[in-house]
Length: 361
Image (cartoon, rainbow, N blue to C red):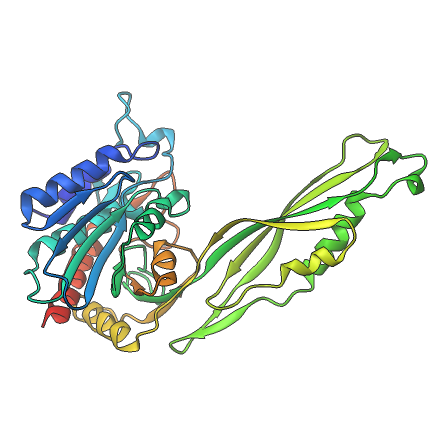
């Protein structure tokens, strides 16, 4: 089966509110085309395994959920619009990341079962909701030694080149809460202005250094930014409460000391979301995947870093050495005209097959 045809079948299945149909499609296809042990678990994850698992394990990893489609990406009957034109497949989830899932399915199906080790295919649910499927699988005991995660890595070092991401940033979203005492605005000294306290906290955030680290010789720099502020109840009332939202892009092993805002009277700080960053700790594995990527294309792939969090962060957090290799290009995912190159899908299939073959050798 050609990767473009499998991609189109998978993209056509709605999976932004309920990914169960897409998961069942993946699971059924794997049962029909492989002798692997295939599970479609209660969380919506699809996990297939080849080999006895007495040695090391390698996984090809993706996700089959998508973000809500644009209205132009949905037919009247609720199915997704899928079009192939000018060498690209258009449709919600084509780039992020059903195309790479299809390439990984085909590579997994083509691979021989390891004699001692374990080859795994995993497509998780709920990646777009903070990695809930991957996290649930980990809680249930999912562990692999190495993983190739099929999120986008094409076009980072040069247009059209599929690179190998050896690290990516995480995201910590948090809220600064400033509390004061309400009073009539004609007598401001009778109260404690929560907005003033919040702006003092914002000044603390502005003065923080961005976290940074190095991964396999590559510099990875984070960021911290106040992105929302909300406070006050009326034009003539000294506000008693004000909140500010902070977006922090984290790097492995480092966090900005945002708790310093709590040194200000009346100010507290809470973490609302913490998606972990990823760093590959095995240079030989990263080099081997980069060699496979070089063999699969005319361009010269490089080891790069990604700005976006993926399920690789959750896997890395429990000891998996991950790299990210996938067809999506910067700016393609989550757009009203999302698409993926058929040529790059074929390339990713070759890369995945080569990685598996060299790992099994």
